[in-house]
Structure formats: structure tokens, C-alpha cells
Length: 284
Ligand code: PLP
Image 1 (cartoon, rainbow, N blue to C red):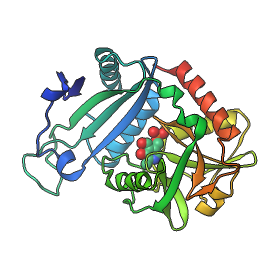
Image 2: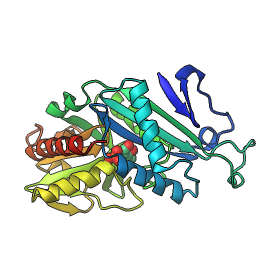
Image 3: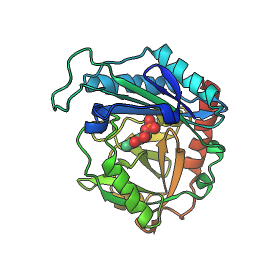
Image 4: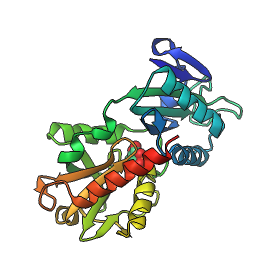
């Protein structure tokens, strides 16, 4: 595989980053994941807007222009012959030379790394037909989940807990209310109303969430942005999650209790279809 590091395209086994990089020592970095279908990028513009917001919130320099990011994404898709899959992008605060809690001096070059992951059949994920089972765990992450940082240890532990219990994912719960999934935004459906937590520092502002809510509005579905409990979710008609790589994924079981009739719901199925259709049309 050919990867990108700070301006160079290299075979992955020749790509290196300093051990003093703040991304490595302090998780001082942000990332984005953009899906690729038919060799084109889905919602690239949305992801770059969020990347710049994440960088600004951490007072980190943005090393590349929007056009340069797009060019690297496209070159990696081409060099690696990606039809379906993703492009991963990470920007860290770079290598100050010594370990220090204070930020390095102005002008320290951020580290930019990008690589592809191939995933043939991404759009036809069979899990979308059967739905995910999930568990709930306490949300023990930091308080700025709106910034897409590479500090992913807690969500990773939650994912391992889900695996150990034989299910697909975990929903994180704080003060009795669901915040989001380990790597996706969480929704329930009651009647014709789609309910999802409002945007705040408590959750990542999903790019897929924004698109799906826009499509739901356009399709005259009702949307309520508010918090909900696990109990309410277990008693809802449907549940689902959204993310750039799972798209719209139905959830059919929460902590062992079936959601609705325990089958993939009509609203989630319809939103997945609309999302994929519209995103393919607008792909770059
Ligand atoms: N919430 C969390 C914690 C995530 O890590 C992600 C994606 O990685 C999402 C939500 C979904 O965001 P997006 O739709 O932009 O992929």
C-alpha cells in the first residue's frame, strides 16, 4: 500500500513518524475518515469543514489547503486502486523534539498522515439486513467529544466489551442518557419521529448525522433533537446508528432486549437507501 506522510507518497513500510510526535506521546491530534464508493469520496466537503474546526478548537495549524487535501485523497485512491473503502486522515501537533505538556513553539510543523483501507462491498454490508446488537456502557470519555481527536482508548475498551459479550457495538450513557455509539451517532424511532441527541460538546457532530437529518426533513419525516434513555430505546419502534463508514446501520437489540419487533426497521432501511443514493450522486 502507498501512504502519504508530510508531502511524500511512500510504501507503507517506509513511512515513519518521530517517537517525539505529540500524536504518539499525548494523543495530540485529530482525524477524519471519508468513505469511498466507486472510487469517489462521500461528503468530502463536510469532513474537511469538521477537520478545520477540530484543528481550530485545539489551536493547531492547518497544514494543507482544501484543494491539497482533496488532491492527496484522490491520489491515494488512484495509487492504491481503491473502488470501495475509506481514506483515513490524521493531523498531529508534530515533533517538538522534547516531551513537554506545553505546546511546541509556533512554526512547529504538524504531522499529516493519510492512508487508504480497501473494503469491497462496503455499500452492500450484509449487517444492514440483519441489524446490530448492542450493549450500553457508561460514557467515561473526556468532555470535548465534539473535537474528533485520536484519543480513542475508551471507545476501544467499550468496543472490546461489546465483542466479549458477543454483540456489535456499545452505546455510551452519561447521566442516564445515551450520548452516542463508540464510533457513531445514536437514534431511536417512535412512530414517525426520529429522535437523536442534540449537538453539544457531549457528542461528535457526525457528518453522516447532518446529512441523514437533512434527508429525513426533505422526506417529511419528523425529527426531534433530544436525549433519550436506554429504557426508552428498548421500547422504541426502531433504533439505528450513523457514521461515515457504517452509513445508516439498524440496531435490533439493546442490552439483550429486542427493539420493536427485533427486526430491521422501515425508517432505518429507507434512510440508508436515500443516504447512499444521494451521497453517490454528490460524490467527488
Ligand atoms: N461519534 C463518534 C464518537 C465517532 O467516532 C463517529 C465517527 O467516527 C461518529 C459519531 C460519526 O461521525 P461521522 O458521521 O462524521 O462519521
